[in-house]
Each structure stands twice: as structure tokens, then as C-alpha cells.
Amino acid sequence: MKALYKSGPHAGFELVDRPEPEAGPGDVKIRVMTTGICGTDLHIQSWDAWAQSIIETPLIAGHEFYGEVVSIGEDVRDVKVGDRVSGEGHVVCGICRNCRAGRRQMCINTVSVGVQRDGAFAEYVVIPETNVWVHHDPSVTPELGAIFDPFGNAVHTALSFPLVGEDVLITGAGPIGLMAIAVARHAGARKIAITDVSAPRLQLARDLGVDLAIDVSRTRVKDAQKELGMREGFDIGLEMSGHPTALPEMIDNMNHGGRIAMLGLPSQSIDIDWGKVVTHMLTLKGIYGREMYETWYAMSAMLSSNPGLHRNISAVVTDKLSATDWEKGFEIARAGTGGKVVLDWTEL
Image 1 (tube, rainbow, N blue to C red):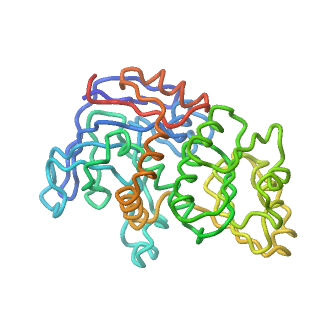
Image 2: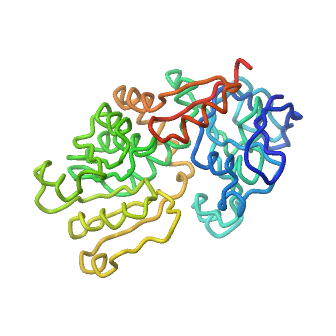
């Protein structure tokens, strides 16, 4: 099979022939149709300090995908050959304290698809049946199915706190931040503002119906509050960027008792006014991945019940290329000016 392969501890990938993976007793083998390019994949490609600290080569990367089941192991009970599926990328142990308590997203022994085990930048991928999400809704296209993983990040983050009637600040208008706009609107938010420095991404946010898109290279969030007619600060903060100035400015603009969900991974330490966190009684919650599998159920239910949400999440995919043009796809994703980039593996 063709696969994007990192042969050793160095920058780059190669599109080469690799042996097809085979399904074990509890596994499912999937013919990959589409894959999304994630920030994690950019780190692995460039072989930066984070990648060097966590990746063991050789490796096939890629964890956002949609495909068709082609074979199943003898112990597989529910997934069938021919099912159209996406995959939860966190493979958990099932026996640690959190797994046994039903909190599998907090498994201390998690192994990630495309990071610590071979992933989906290939014609075939194998994952455990427990990690397979079957799409029963025929309106889920291969492009939409490929971004269920990051859509799950947006849903997990946005639904961490009740949103009905609340004013929401999203920092970072990347693909996940853009999807969070649609989720927050679906969940009943009153006013939604988003920040970024990329004009194209801020325009995408406007197209998705955000109330205010703020270019923080020119405008401060405090000034934007006045434009929205707000008097007491934001109720909910969704930090999606990881930028070192985003969280402090968010904290400065939260109402007393405000709640912040943090998905963005900072690349450096952040100086926080902890006195303000205490005296303003703020709640900060870290978010990683998706809840297994309540987030997946919520994603499917919302998409099937809300055509507008379906349309807006689908619109976050702004570029689709053949997997043979993967280098161009990575360049587009790294530029940080558009939405989600999807690679097509059906015509190599």
C-alpha cells in the first residue's frame, strides 16, 4: 500500500510502498478514503522538539480519517465489513483507574494512532473495534467524516459548560475554533466573539455567523466588548490557540464567575494573574481529545438534527487534494490562513 512514511528521526515524510497492516482478533481493517491534516502532523513532519520527545520512528502518521471497513478480526462483534467509519485516535488500556471508572479519555496509558502507533496517512489502517465510530447517517460525506476527530475537540471544549444565553469568547480561529462557533450557536450561546490575526480565517468566522471577529493585532478584546454592548465581561471562554497572550487577555475580559475551557497547547510558559483568577472566582478546565464516547454521540446527533450545523461544519474544509499532492496540502495547512485541509486517498 502507499503510505506517508517517516523512516527515521528526521524531518519530512516519503510517499512510499509499505506492507498492508493486518487485523488482529479484536481489530478492524479500514480502507482509508480521506484524511485531515492536523497540527500534530505538522510537528511530526518538521521533527521539532515536541515530536522528538514523543515520536519513535519508523512511523506512519495521521489520525483524522474516514474510510470503509474491509476486514474484521474474529472477536469483533458489532462493526461490519462495508461500514463507513471514522476512528477515535486514543487507544486506551481498559484497566487503569480511569478506564475502569468509565473515564477512558483520561487513561494514563493512552497510545495515540499516528503518534505512538501507525496511523491513517495510508491506504489502510488498523484500529481496535472499540475505537471505530460507524456513521449511520448517509449525509456524512468523506470530507466531513475525515474531520470528526477535530470536530470532537471543538464539541468537547464548547460543551464543557452550559452555553444557553451566555456570552462566549473564542481565542484562535483555526479549524477547531471555527467549528466551536457553530457548536456554541447550536447550544444556545447569546453573543459569540472570536480572535485571530489572520484576515482569511476571521472572514471564515464571519461566514459561519460569529457576532464579532476580532483582529487582535489591531483591536483589544476589551474594546470589542463595547461593540457587542456587553457590560460585565464574557461568561464562557474557549481558548483554542495556545498563544501565550491569549489566555491572559481572556482572563482580563471574563465576568466574575466566568468559566474557561482550554484546548490550545502553549509552546511556552504563560504568565497568568492568579490573583485575578482567585478574586474573580474563575474556573479553568483543561481539555484533551474527546470524551469516549459521549462526544462522538453528541457530534452525530447534532449533525443529523441540525442542517445548518451540518453545513457550517462541512464548510470548515476549505481544501481537498489528492494524497499524491500531500506536500502542497501540508504547505497550505502550515500557512495557517484557511480552514481544514483534507487528503483524498482513493485516487493515487
